[in-house]
Image (cartoon, rainbow, N blue to C red; front, side):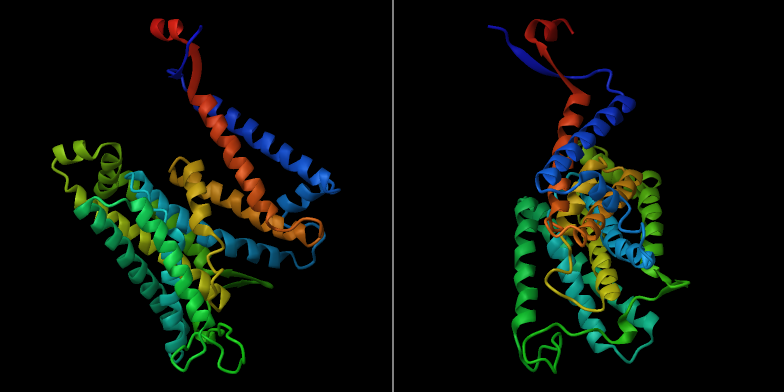
Length: 367
């Protein structure tokens, strides 16, 4: 009986990996096309509308760009934040919960600081969101450092705790609950004062929000931080081997605490940008960026430039499916999640094929 083993390729090449990735994505799109055809939808027309995000033949195309950017900004920032913690092998799965904490903190400022100028109000919203999310992140990290708790379970439970907190706020009609619309008979989250809305640069009918510009700058800042600073180098060393980091005299505990605070605070910032752009809060305000950000970070292999590109592509996929769903009632926007899952699985297989090969035991000994 022949025995086979998995062997890592000694000649792993970037070009081959890209080709395998392209094949994987093509396969996933083909499977998606078969599903569309089974529903009686022309896959070429659907994909055309999806990848063009509904711009073709749309006299209000700038609205599509604005909608795309509202998905892109929180996804990019959350993916950058998760990449920081993942780089030191701290598996922060609590992006959803940290996002909701930041959204609640930003909303508290928005509803109670209506008399301040727009710039000051939005700045305070960002600070409140970053501090609140950062505190939660550093608390989870402290438990990990002190008692070696499982950060995956801790952060995962945080997601559901905060989801029920925000649902409680959205369903409890009471005098103290300033989150709700006072004039509505049924509980509905209220709209922020005008001073809490995100400002921007008007370009004709299009408005480029400041959050978009800052998200792009933040990508550059995180890249420089990881690649050219001492703190970024420490994160990489801890991720490679905490024992090596300790041997080199690094304080692993402090590095974990610092990095988790930054990571969680950035997710809070993404939440503040999101609620300020939306002008309200809801229990669906995250748009699942805490989960999607994990996919983006993994697909990018924690490379910051790749995170930016992948976030753009995933945003186009999500918003494009929304735009296409308006024309094809037989399928809804959940098709984006299906297609996203197919792409993730296909890339997983492609990554495996690019980096490993199956050999017979005799060949493995001779290799």
